[in-house]
Length: 202
Image (tube, rainbow, N blue to C red; front, side):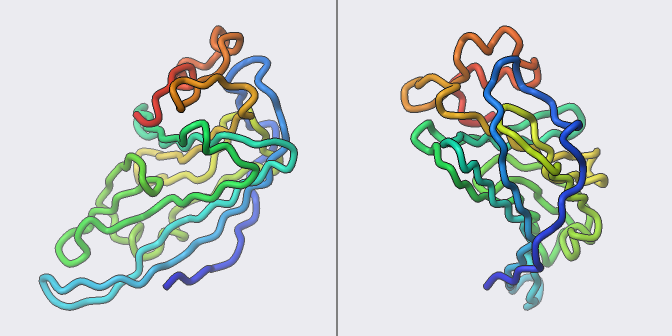
C-alpha cells in the first residue's frame, strides 16, 4: 500500500535546460513529483518490516503526443530506457525507485527507473529516508527537446536522473521503435547519440 507525501515544488529555472539538438520542437511540459512509500517484509535473517521508497513523476504535454526517455548519469556513465513509438501520449507517469538489495543483511540500495537499468550504493539512510538526501531538481518551465533534470543523489557520485521528451512528429519509425529525424542528428549532443538509433535501452 502506497503512502504519498505530497507534491514537491520545483527547483531550478528555464535557463538551465540544454537542448538535445538544434531545431527539435519545444513545447511546454507540466512535471510533478511526489514521494511514495510501500510497506515490505522480510523473513531472513529475522522477520522485519520496512518501507521501500520511490519518487513518482507525472508528465503532461497539452499540445501534442510525446515520447519519453529516462536517463541516469553517474561517474561519467550513462544509462537509458525508453518506450516504443506506439507509447507516445500526452500524459506519462514513471517512478525512480530506491530499492533494498537485501534489507536483512545489506545496506545496498539500488537506484533506477522501474523496469530500467540501475546504479547501486551502500547507504542505509538512502533506503530509509531518501527524501532527506535526494535533491528534486525539476525546472520551472520544462519543454520538449531538452534534457530535463529530475533528481540528484549526491552520495552516489552525483547521480542525476533525467528525462528527455520529444514530439512524435520529430521522430521516425524504426521497426516499431523510434529515432530522431535525420535533420536533427548532425547537432545531436554526443552524450545522447542513442536518440539517433532505435535502441530502447543501454
